[in-house]
Image (cartoon, rainbow, N blue to C red; front, side, top):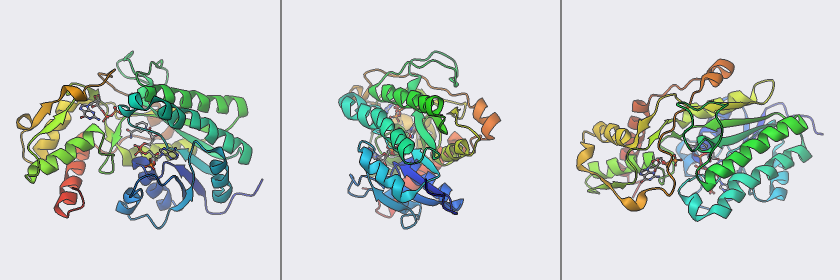
Amino acid sequence: MTPQPARKHALITGVTGQDGAYLSRLLLDKGYQVFGLVARRGSDALWRLRELGIEAEVKLLVGDVTDLSSLMRAIGQAEPAELYNLAAQSFVDKSWDLPTVTVQVTGMAVTNVLEAIRNCDARIRFYQATSSEVFGRVQARAHDESTPFHPRSPYGVAKAFGHWLTVNYRESHGMHCSSGILFNHESPLRGPEFVTRKIAMGVARIKLGLQDKLRLGNLDARRDWGFAGDYVDAMWRMLQQDAGDDYVIATGRNASVHEFCRLAFAHAGLDYAKYVEVDPALLRRAEIEAVLGNPSKAQLKLGWSPKTTLEQLVAMMVDADLARLRKGALS
Ligand code: NDP
Ligand code: GDP
């Protein structure tokens, strides 16, 4: 076993994603050396790190969570004290079209990450990005750590597997493993396929006369939406505890897609009713109608609470897409 380096090292899988970018910035601000596992699939995979101005500071290591040897090599190179597993096929709707890929990347690959840690250095503290999708069918008014799972998509099933494996490595091997059961969190860096970013981009394009209508699926679905920048702080706090544990991270308030649209269009001085249309082709095969989280445990044990309101989040997202469009950085 090699001694831990003086400056804390962290390794992030999924570093090019929304949370990977915000978590990298948080850890760099705390003085960490940040390493990111990158498979380099997209044509401009580093755009989020660039937007946050940290592209040059994150050390990129080539690897894929479905490839155990690349993970072991990355751990050998990074020598991390903390490993955050954020890699996933993270879009619920796509998981019905790509169930095998989703289960392999989002679920099975957690085994690779945990085995790589166990074999390289079992002292490494581990964070698993679990999702409120594990709860699926609504069984409680507000979901907490004791609410039973009933996932409704291949993505949710894969996340449930990752969660239980994380718990199992904590219990079987005594490793410092935490599962953050995070409810939806958004930002200007959110992927364009998710409804909040689709709305923000639509509002910006309509405001600038580039689009007439915004077509959406289920407007009645309710989500507990928070700001990704707040949520990555909760991930870090979990790994600073004496032992690993499971935590629900949410705002405790939900809103409908209707409501999100109303706020977003109003922020740009527009009435959403004139622009939003329902396209039945965008309805889900199995919908989760309402999602609400109870973050009391995280508040009590981690001293964490969300800082950004839904109204602030909406404004931030619409303003960012308006600015991008105005400077030609969004088509
Ligand atoms: P993103 O979709 O923005 O990021 C996913 C990341 O995973 C990307 O960097 C992607 O790289 C990478 N990735 C995909 N497949 C592989 C692979 N085989 N090997 C290595 N990397 C891979 O997700 P978010 O940042 O929003 O979310 C982070 C994590 O949190 C995910 O696991 C997500 O499922 C989970 N989560 C997110 C929530 C949210 O509301 N944002 C809620 C609850 C959980 P590439 O771009 O090259 O494909
Ligand atoms: P999810 O909660 O992880 O599935 O996040 P999404 O942002 O993809 O979807 C949130 C909710 O918005 C779901 O209930 C969707 O059915 C609903 N929704 C309505 N219209 C759309 C749409 O056009 N795109 C997406 N992605 N979701 C939509």
